[in-house]
Length: 436
Ligand SMILES: [Zn+2]
Ligand SMILES: [Zn+2]
Image 1 (spheres, rainbow, N blue to C red):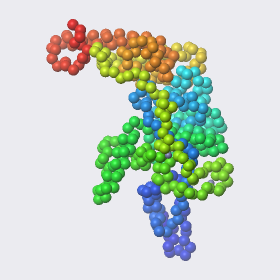
Image 2: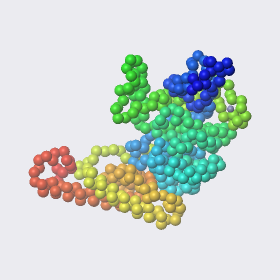
Image 3: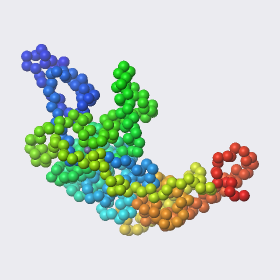
Image 4: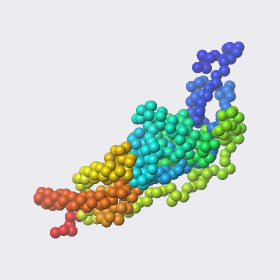
């Protein structure tokens, strides 16, 4: 490109001006310089930061993976009075989160759920998304938008207060773009927040990624193959790894982007009107690295049921699980029809039967089936899940499923006995020996 512009020979050189956003220092910047053949000695580099320092960055660890019903850690959003957008990696995840929030909202009898909770993904019709954006942009009241990447760039909603990113972003650029949706207009939002939920293994993966890069730097002659990581799992992007491990998140952003801390404020009309830039660091950083959150404030996830080893005669075989899941699938239909009959649940029409009992929850109940032998225990376990309010029905099904399991167990035993030889069955069904 530079060659074609040929400034060296010409008497009046043609200046080349290149502009970009979210340009990291290091390899990314050098790559662009290389591509444009910019001479390191003959260029001006002007960096301006649009980073809004009042955004409080909070990093939390996901609890869902192990919990009975998914996404409990996001349920606080339902009672939050703040305009919130939740970014999800996939359309599937976005759908599951919105289904979960809707069903919990219904259980809690929250008003206006269908206008409050919306998904915004590439699956929707473009016209549908456009009209939704319009209503959203004009709506200063608390809404919950569950979105995929389609909404992360170029969306200018001045009322968004909280941006939640559910899962590690691809890289720090992705992170910065997404959290930039919060507090775009200081006249409307004074305390924007960015909340990143990382998976339980994120810190370990981040440490591994940083280690891998450092190791390859110490061996300058060998190509950067990153042998430290698993062959089948790509290492975490180094920019997001460093962010996750950072002691202070805004400081890490400043480092990676080479932000100038004493940059003068932009004096253009737009910036002055909306007070959109702030170069100076706030005197005391309030990110969750500098000011850790009190987990009891936000962690709604309580492991209500202690894990216990299966007692004798209570092991659950694959066959039992399949049969149990079938029974819960028909419970799902019963619950769905029951909810439809009750006029109080005006939102049911919008929900798929899955919303009333996810497979995850059914599996979790089956696992605990021998624990769930009192109505109180069932009550306790379904509280806050999509089955809240249906614990009578759940209890009855639990009784039924336990009986079914006994039948299956007895049949399996009889078959084994019928096969004669007592050899080669050690280790299977420890619960057998106690009855003679
Ligand atoms: Zn900090
Ligand atoms: Zn400006």
